[in-house]
Length: 402
Image (cartoon, rainbow, N blue to C red; front, side):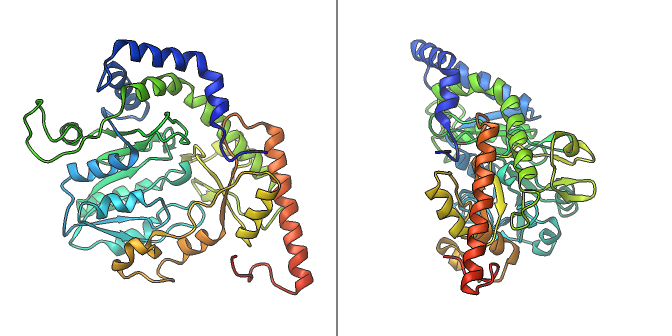
């Protein structure tokens, strides 16, 4: 069995340090906004090229609080991607604002800047790009639109801590970068946790107030806020892990490039693509990925596109290979957003990717032999599906999803 993600190995490798940090925090009995939270905020701000960071209860709260701090509310529109987790759009709609979706670039899975300008209206308040799967969005054209139309930007960095675009960390371009420390993230705690990183000190100050019931002084409240604070114990765990993050993400890239090489002769598998000076390309190894590189992807997921995705998922499951589909139904077609009036065909790239994408095992502790086993199983499964299709007289590309 090769799991999609193995959290046990990471804990075992750091068990003495993590256990000691938790015991020390417990003994100090400063459980709410204690010294570990303060230090971790400082460390993450530095790591993510931010002036200030505010720890909150989850990545979802980070998004909602950032938008609230920018006064996004009823009547406002926020442009974002339909190919992401629902936390992105529910953070917008939960404030009474309207999520406005635009299509993605099928090569990178990220919001396509060329569609963003077409969606801007007098009601547009902000753009919310999502650095999906650890792949940075193409931020230069987005920031040019922000400047032209005087908009705000909140970056969804839930999957992209450590990723960089033209040498700058994701989360440092807009008014706020919103991070998640959900256990399976590249930097994960033992429950929920989140962080807002910002170079906008006014926004950071307001988030600091909002996360503690809207008050600067205990029992005195200026506005309605939330109880949303990063736990001291979680911060202690994350501080142990943070110094290891660069090595872990280097290993994730190594595994991704190894997969790319192994799938190079399998045309049915469309590998993840990174932005270079000449557009999206598939890096084969560390050397070629540096030439003309625009982004440094941290591969929170290694997601490929294949025909007959659902059948492949079942075959991999039967073979003991972990896999997952992120995301089977794009947000514009979800019931929760039916009132927005979107229909199938509105965003063809996002819809096609949702039908074809599958994420394969990738985590730092994955061995080279395991990567090769996964790739071999994928290739053999695709070959078997092709043989079955030919015997049944069915075109592989045209077969409906299961």
